[in-house]
Length: 305
Image 1 (cartoon, rainbow, N blue to C red):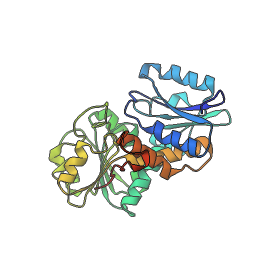
Image 2: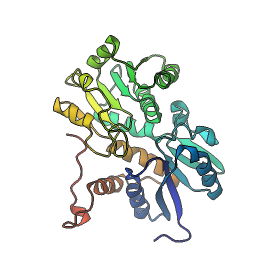
Image 3: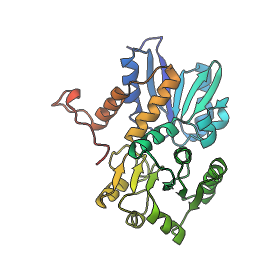
């Protein structure tokens, strides 16, 4: 029951129609009997500064930040947690007394997923598609996991070089490279890749359609390569379908969404998140209502083939 005492935690981004985060977090709030509600608030880029002024004026207890604001919000905050500082991107806002702090729980989310897929990534080779806030978080996770080589595929040369330059400073033992066109060096990296991560919104509902990685490059991947698509809606993107058609293990971003959400929940509430219930609520919301079956009979969407 929403009352005059209920406090909103908000999702700031544009667009947000694809997001199922409200179902996930509101389920968690209800289970732990917290007088909070999670709301998606579309904020165009030109209105971000005004939105953050409102956030401060209302002293809202917390927020998530998503595309396209993960980097733009940095100068509007008072302090950054280490992961946000390293990634130079933020996806979670919370208060420490009267200090507004930015964190990047995407780093935690993607790292947890990658460790679940393979315990030891030390010395391996990764391809990372994208140069925005999600790519920066993934790059930090790859650095922490001890990859030997990371090739970044970016449409924007300046943005891509900016990411690899920062990461080279943070992780000097890793060979970082940026690629905006198909070169022999990129082809060599593709054939050696142990992991591919899509950190772009390509293929996401409401975003650019198509496949995040050229099909010709997918066809060059080795048989043991794991393909990880951060997109979770839809659960099966063109990239995942292309990888699976070659017999590769392909994983969508549902697990990462739950993982980063649980870490954000802890920041806002100081409580451990009910992860099982959050995941169940997310999958049920994605499956949609079934008039012939109660919610508990909804089949979960498979995350891995």
